[in-house]
Image: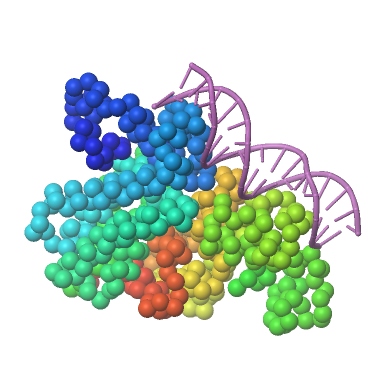
Length: 224
Length: 224
DNA sequence: GTCTATAGTTCGATAGAC
DNA sequence: GTCTATCGAACTATAGAC
């Protein structure tokens, strides 16, 4: 998944297969494409090097331009970082929403939670550098950047709190726990995958997601 | 807990109450005390600001000296950071070992795991800035620093893997899970407390540790 | 041991040509 | 839009006085 999937520009919603997000030649301005290259490059570098170790020279190099050129598209380094991290949250939400929608509205809370876990694991491990950049760089970023992301991040936490609360309400999850505390612990445990899980090892991606879901759910299922 | 508790210098093992770690006046050299002030100051700043945002001027200021003076005691910023992070691992190990020893050797694996969780939560939330500095700064530190800490960090992970394996062996924990994967997820979930838990809120420390242990253990208990 | 002063780097940001 | 050149700030590290 790259940044193009999340653009609000209707010209870029994809599906045409020629890579520029449009089927009639290049109606997208050159500057718009450069902007996306910058964000993709920044997401890749931020996700594996962190905030401080990612310089504008690095980003520009990965986007095949010079450092000074970045300022035509963005006001500052932090503006780039903020957009990458914001898109990272969007990617995660989109992945989870799609999985829940595919499950149908009548599913039990515990099943919806399990699907959300699998979708988020997949997003972190296999789909979005933007999401990994957000996980890794949020705490390293300047206070102003963190404040700008506070609302979407709170919404993301609340998405999990809501899933837990649904399950508690329909009886598929035990109700003697604080949903907000559990949500934070769960999210952190999931986020940690970005630090240590590497595809291609002995542990397959599907098994990882399932094992995580099993651990959480068996811990949350009401005793028989 | 401060760095003095972990010094290998027998003159500093404490208990005398006068603060210099020795009961017959100040047999400890002035430089040794300064070194400890530096480490304590660095741990405090690193734990709440992170690696890049903690400057030598900050550390020196908190230790009541000038930046240049730090180089009498340490070779570089990274040498300070490395020692702080290393002591942080030592603090965590010591807290867990003490709790397990107090429990006695005949305790079941699941009880030992629960005690370790409570001890580690307490270390993070209430005891050691060094441990929090390690949790926060390890990923932000230069590669060379991370490599230097690889061995003690692996040992720390193995401590948890061992606890899980003990419980699986004596039947108090379910055996159909990968102990190494569970250990990493658990450690990350616990480490996340450093980011969001703040003492004095509505959630009491004991309840937090217990809720975490309950979630993990009920998820790990064999089905009845 | 600690201080003051400063050298040497790195990096974000700006200016102006093309 | 992108490039080259450079400014200015921040920080690590060093040198030498005391």
